[in-house]
Image (cartoon, rainbow, N blue to C red; front, top):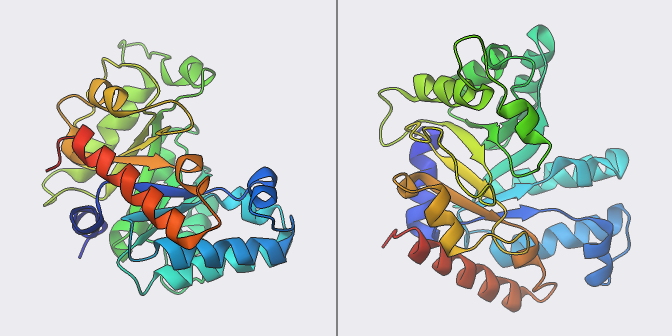
Length: 276
């Protein structure tokens, strides 16, 4: 199965929700865990016990694992490997972006099944030119994986780049969305090239119908709710994957509380997106 098909299946099973694993120091402290690789491993195991096979997607933020060095990367490998045998997909939030052989190396690291860091999908940055993503997009298609390309992010600084226009008047964001749309052409039930569109951007005039998934970070603690999802993604709500981190993980470290909170957020997102 393609990533697009597997993602649709996971959402139908568990609801439209991606939970971000962002083990920043304050969260580890709130869970009464040390800010080191040992605490990171305990954090990961609690989340896996609570949410694997219960949410559609788990999204480890690579930086919060990398900050602990090789021991932290080992925990990230553990998370990816543990999810491989479940109905929950792994989305590695790495936001890599480069050119040529370096981009191919990133594809090998995060998308090739031979790598211990290979997840079901990754996030990438297109700001060395959307064409520079070719090795990763090709690798994802070859291995049945997914890619989410930054398109319309919620941080105010992003607009300076994403809203810039070329000589034909097309914005950078539009070019990114157009490439995703082209790559997804003809794929059923949907393509495997997604776009990252912040749920907190308010609104956009860009065409979000890319025939692929739309990752929508910002649900919960960052301020986006049902109304914001409906406003930003009007007409394409059937492809939206809302993402929440603190809004779910704030219920931890109790496993039952985490499951209940994730279920509540998924149900709210399902209702807000009119997904049945």
